[in-house]
Image (cartoon, rainbow, N blue to C red; front, side, top):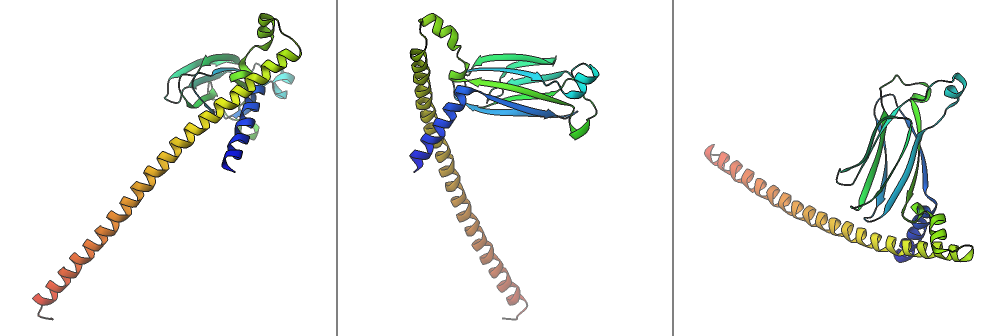
Length: 217
């Protein structure tokens, strides 16, 4: 059952990678909102981000609010950073496995408007095979139709295989952490019990000595 569940998760994840992911964020006047994506190493990531045209801006012909964006790796390395923009894009190849953060905030703090937000930001993320330019590949390889679809399916199968291998590694890491934690908790419990017994013995000895000094025993 575990293997079936892992395969199902990997298939769904690979399918999501093939189509990409779009997210909308409501930014407050102050503070930061982030999107985290767990990505393995050596994977191409491409994204477009933009401030969404809301009705009040379109109707009033007002300028879109400016935002700032920063992308960081799991170990805090900066991969992309822009200030005071209304749209932009970034692309990179991951060198570390783990959660990659995309954080947005208002370029200039403002008083929040209705629904407690100052701007709405959209971000379209493409990871792995979804980031491939299949049109360029088709022209380069001189393929089309069924052959191109087979190439996409081959890429999808490879992505599933790599996701399964990555999930297996992460499962091993989590199991190792869990085992270490359980071992430490067990030792802590034993030491706590031993300390309680020692304190009880010391208290008993102290009470006996007190009663003997008072000649009550």
